[in-house]
Amino acid sequence: MRPGFVLDVDERTPPLLVHQGEGFRLEKFPLGTRVVYPPESLPGLPDVDGAIDHALESPENSEPLRALMRPGMKLTIAFDDLSIPLPQMRRPDVRQRIIEKVLTIAADVGVDDVKIIVANALHRRMTGAEIERIVGERVFRSFWPNDLYNHDAEDRDNLLHMGLTEAGEDVEINRRAAESDLIVYVNVNLVAMDGGHKSVAIGLASYNSLRHHHNSHTMVHSRSFMDHTKSAMHSSTWRMGRLLADQVKIFTVETTLNNSPFPEKYAFLTKREWEWSLKDQASAYGMSRAVAAMPKQARRKLFQSVVADYAVTGVHAGETEAVHVKTLENVHRQQLVEVQGQSDVLVVGLPYLSPYNVNSVLNPILAMCLGLGYFFNMYRGRPLVRKGGAMILYHPVTWEFSQLHHPSYVDFFEEVLAESTDPATIEATFEKQYATDPWYTHLYRTSHAYHGVHPFYMWYWGSHGLDHLGDVIWVGGDRRTCARMGFRSASTLADALEMASGTVGTSPSMTYLHSPPHAIADVR
Image 1 (cartoon, rainbow, N blue to C red):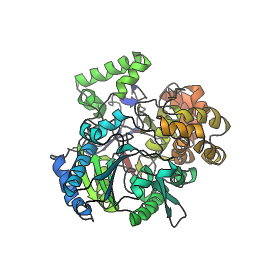
Image 2 (image 1 turned 90 degrees about the vertical axis):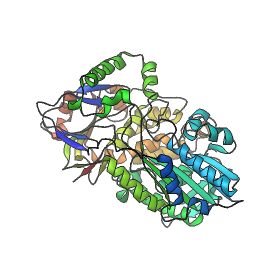
Image 3 (image 1 turned 180 degrees about the vertical axis):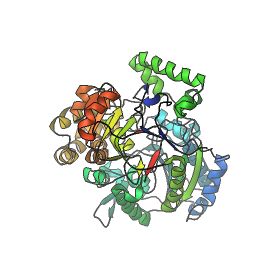
Image 4 (image 1 turned 120 degrees about the horizontal axis):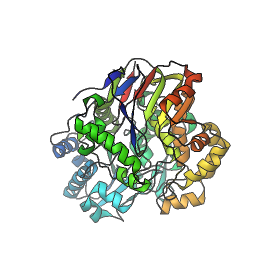
């Protein structure tokens, strides 16, 4: 495995692959552009089942899982929803393997009061087929639907207020979990912001609890979400997690994956371009043209059907904080790239997928969140782009929404953004109305819609980026859509650089973050 790599574009550098929604292009970058490549994939564990057994039997700062169980107890198993990993991993999902092990131990001990809960917070309810894909056919058949179900953050009868943190934050979670003798949380850590105390404190929480850290003030002051020690959100969820840990026994199982988000037939997507074989070159040029010529629905079906060849690189279990330290070591070992200094311009290509449009549409709000909330924040230390610099993103940003999954997004885009794009103003003026709207709540609880407040949270995710940047330009973006969000669009990279010249000058320094696979820039 080779570590991350930083390339300075010269005359010999071939065109570089840039993701652009449900497609990609090969782009020739200006001489001197700095390109940050992610590390190559770490090898997977040789014996995943053995690693799971070891983690459950020899946990971090905890008794073995078996010793925590007893007949007659209430056991709740919670697991991350379909928002991670991205894309979905080849079966069997590592969460299935862990849940089956936990259930086997519970059966051996004589625990028969077991519930399994999808920790979906304010995300949409997963379908039965989506749940079955994660937990496996045997678990699904044995527990669905009465003992295996989605968390409902609006079911007042099944929420329990656990108290206030020292900062006055409400901690309110799923009643079944709160009243359990033991919660086993099964997690996949794809990036550093996942896991830790966020798992229970967010995944099983209500809006009343989430509003304390999912707000414009916290987001704009979170600095890098990938550097937990400097994240205001991390501080809030840490306080909530500690309060929960004082009242409920939580046994955390965290896993990490390598950097293999594409199957073998798309191997060129994870290679450095100057190392492409003739076959890779033909695949890249052929697929880019074929995808561009496809009808929209066929193109979307092709991309949403991608299954990743992830390998498991770590399994750790036990007390949440002790486990998360080990998890972050694995994540950083796989993703961290040392980079010297900041640039005037940061360029990123956005793929077709975010945590919030699995089997759905990446609408403009989600594109903004993916670019300014996630890719901008893929750093540790300092952002890749200087204060007041420009960010250039590749994505078509079409005016398109899923009425099934994102109904409140439609109104947010057409009504809220028509009034203001400022996160603090949006929060003060509109959030409560959307968060408590009976129709949005009904769709969240009975259909497969994200909670009414969810588009606000996506806009807040970009708050730090919006506050830091002096210009945001979308290459290939629909002009009307970009303008509604307060951004500009350009036809080409050259046009975008010319438009940004008023902000960064005519000869700016540039960094292209070559992702996915994921890379976290350790900016010195």
